[in-house]
Length: 306
Image 1 (cartoon, rainbow, N blue to C red):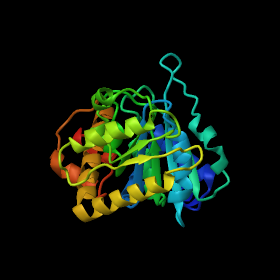
Image 2 (cartoon, rainbow, N blue to C red):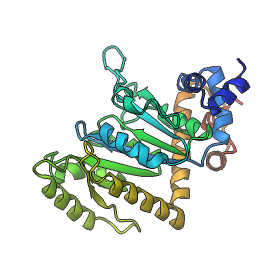
Image 3 (cartoon, rainbow, N blue to C red):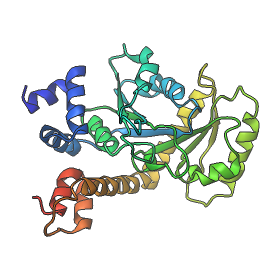
């Protein structure tokens, strides 16, 4: 099957073709580079929502509840990042199993990725996979990170809206602040609200948000119990409100430029073995932002491979 035929099949919801396209891109094969270049030029339309938080806060269950509420009449993809073993390098990729009840919905596609030892809750291949899904016509992409801790907050550089999930009894206000969650959170969620300590967690988060800088957007604190769907509609409403803010304030454009710069920097690291004359970095970032050039090709140009 030619690359053109493979892309056509993937766009027509052929799950096997879609998986092959993403595998090529994840493994950075020569075919993957060509496929990514095409898809990246056609991306930039999907809304990308990140869901992150500490292990055990119920992120996967919450994502499962978000999917039917966000998919609407379009198509939705979930990129679930699982931790890799530091010994074998393998990963269980269990989030796809936990969301198995959604497997029969043709509008929903779930892709598991191993983080391959990368910090930040995502892997180096997460941004290109997200861009490829965007280019393949998915209207919504949800990125669920591995359980993150202090400073592991890279998801915020990949998504439009970052949802940070905590649960009652998880740390204290100082620990939340150390993790940097308030800096990346667009929406804060106290999940497992049927447990003792939920009210205290909400009070702590609201107090910390009130002390934060005025950036034009105040992260709301939403209370959910994902196991029975309580509060999930309110979470969707908060996400939608943030999207309105992004569009009206111009913040989405700024974030997309930051995301383009990050993808370019990551691609440069992966292409760092090359050397040569380098074109202007700002010009390359501008072209990546406008989808005129994909990050891998820009990195190759920067390092003199083109």
